[in-house]
Length: 168
Image (cartoon, rainbow, N blue to C red; front, side, top):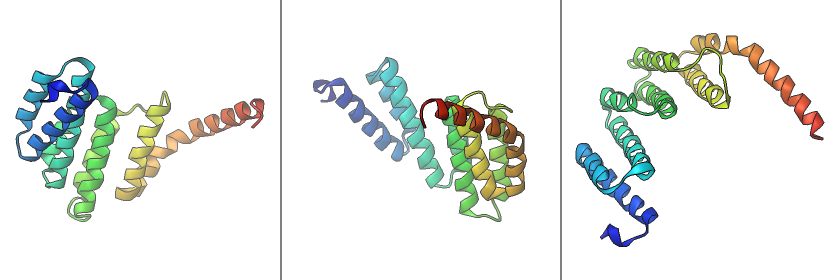
């Protein structure tokens, strides 16, 4: 039936079907269906969407180890944000019992990040981890922030100079 629709509608329908299968515990069937029905960039996008859905579904069920395993397979950018979200979810589920586990997840995330951000995406990801650490382990968050202070000051000064030349 989906073959009769335009490609964008087909993609939406296949992703919705994959999510439904995933919700019913049939993740592998969902992935197989997407691989059969789609190709190229559309397939990559659909698989990424389904993987996010599956990881979120596992998190909501409290299956944190399984969710982490799925997230470790994400592309780098998605992996970092997903694992950061997982750490906060684990921590908020039981702050006392899960403190060490959440901190451990964030330490794994830190291993994926550069020591010194090279672009805005790196900086955003580092600050997302720092924000999570501020809730889970404030002292560790400050330790992670401290080496960035000089770079942030330089960026702020450069921004002020650029804004002045642009009439801002």
